[in-house]
Length: 98
Image (cartoon, rainbow, N blue to C red):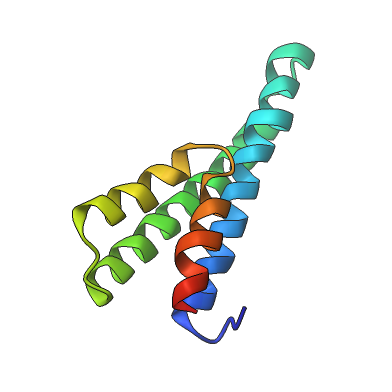
């Protein structure tokens, strides 16, 4: 993964966005609701929100640059809502471009 290229940066964003979603769902949320420790959700949630916005910006950038159809745009966009979805996008979509 070459971080000097836009595709390499998008792949890193996929990794970080996917990890932040998993941390939010499986660590921060249980800490908030089972152990009454809500600050973790605020911190991880803010990081995840920023990474999500960056992920969508990269998705739109590559949709325009590579002339993706509506189906591809929806697949890549909706993957960010599913745990492990961005890892799938990285492996099956972005690795072919890189």
